[in-house]
Amino acid sequence: SAVISQKPSRDICQRGTSLTIQCQVDSQVTMMFWYRQQPGQSLTLIATANQGSEATYESGFVIDKFPISRPNLTFSTLTVSNMSPEDSSIYLCSVVRGWQEAFFGQGTRLTVV
Amino acid sequence: AQKITQTQPGMFVQEKEAVTLDCTYDTSDPSYGLFWYKQPSSGEMIFLIYQGSYDQQNATEGRYSLNFQKARKSANLVISASQLGDSAMYFCAMNSGGSNYKLTFGKGTLLTVNP
Image 1 (cartoon, chains in turn yellow, blue):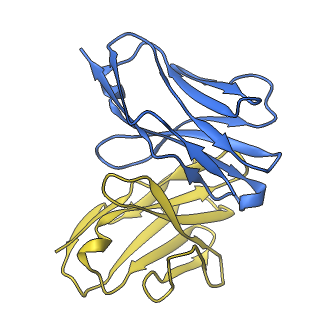
Image 2 (cartoon, chains in turn blue, brown):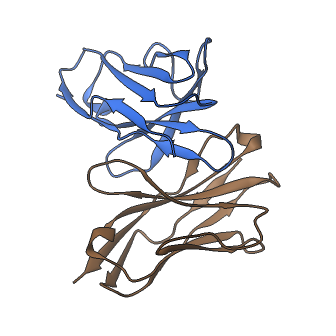
């Protein structure tokens, strides 16, 4: 399995501010993804983090709200911009190495007040 | 498009008994992977078990086994000898080459293990 370090593990933020979440993997991985889990819900894919190029966003998610960087094959960041209480969720990074390896970071529990 | 259906919002089981969590899926891709994850109250997603669409045998990992019935498009998780620490949300998910390995999740099943 891959060792994935996601920071911060939790945060409480004021509305209108931004938070950047980091995801560090212990080895190079092909695919990295960012998911959101709203309270009481399942996981929804935000975007695919592409190394050296712009992320690929899913329907309903835009770069201005969720800018993503992936400067190399082991690191990515997700920023939640101009936050509102509706952004309160768990945010999770995921890495894929081949078909059968899909692992997650510990998650970031975000509360916006 | 891929779809995962988990029809059991909640399940209860007595400690030391076995429990089956249901999962059905739908995809047009001939090659796909099926996953089960455990999410305790801490929020982390813990990988439990994987089944490939071409795997001939059901996957097993310790107390976890996956009852894969391809014709029925079902991938049920069986937990044997339940423990109190098994109480958590359980998610079934799938990916495929056609989806660029993105995972599609079901709504989850909340398992409660009673002493």
